[in-house]
Length: 156
Ligand code: FES
Image 1: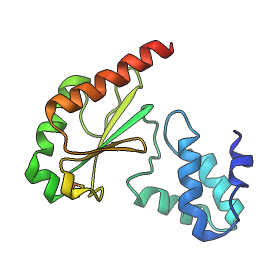
Image 2: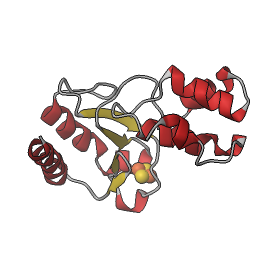
Image 3: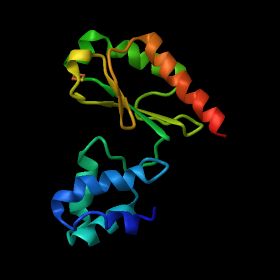
């Protein structure tokens, strides 16, 4: 759907900014907010470009540069760190041959580290786009990545 139509599904109120930014980012196949998106939100909410830009830059769930179709966000907060997020991250790095902050050459995956995802009791935790995966180990993450790759090859 066109972003100008999409934005109109929200009341033009400042408290809707985060939800609007989420929807616009999700509507971009490269999972990021463009400067046109920021301008659109600023005009719609009748606030400055820099106010919207500041919010988009502050929150780690938003990106101002292109990312892969699947954004993997690995929790790096204390509980996940103690239970073994390093092993999970290592498996992802080995499997995709990219490090946090990078996107795979096929533009399918980006990897990021993030603060607590709110599921500490089931550490280690990560999110892939909007879906949360808990109680991970190397085998589980390997299967998750293989499933995504398999599904993608069968879409083409
Ligand atoms: S510390 Fe990882 S989900 Fe809370």
